[in-house]
Length: 111
Image (tube, rainbow, N blue to C red; front, side):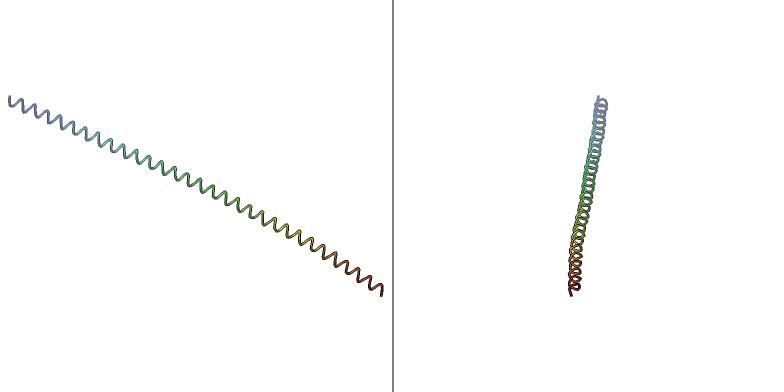
C-alpha cells in the first residue's frame, strides 16, 4: 500500500511538474507574443511618424518654391516698372532736349 501511495504521489508530482512546464511555456509564449506585438506597433508608429515628417518636408519645400517664384515675379515686376519709368523719363528728356534745340535754332535764326 505504501508503494501504491508513493507511486500515486509520484504521479501527482509528475502531473504538477508537467502542468508547471506547460504553464511556463504558455506564459513565455504570451510574453513573446506581447513583445513582438509591441515591437510591431512601435515600428508601425515610427513609420507613421516618418511618413508624416516626410509629408511636412515636401509641403515645406513646395511652399519654399512658391515663395521663391513669388519673389522672382515681384523682382520682375519691379524691373519692368523701373524700365517703364526709365523709358518715360528718357522720352521726357528727349522731348525737352529737342524742344531746347528747336528753341536754340529759332533763337539762332532770329539773330
